[in-house]
Image (cartoon, rainbow, N blue to C red; front, side):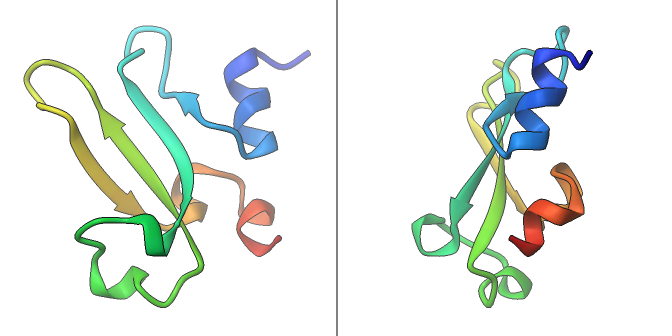
Length: 77
C-alpha cells in the first residue's frame, strides 16, 4: 500500500515534499502560466513548479523538468 504522498505523485497531483516539510509543494503547470521561466524549459508544454512557503524562503518558486519531481512516464503522457 502506498502513502498518500506517493500516490499523489504517481497520479500527477500536487503533493508535499515530506511530513516534516509540509510547506514545500510540487505541482504540474503549463509553461505558459509560469513567470520567469528558464530558457531551457520554455520549449516544454508542462513544467514542475516547486513552491516553498516557509518563512525564510518568502514564497520562493522554482521551475524544473517534470522528470525531476514526478515519475518519467508522467512526463511522456
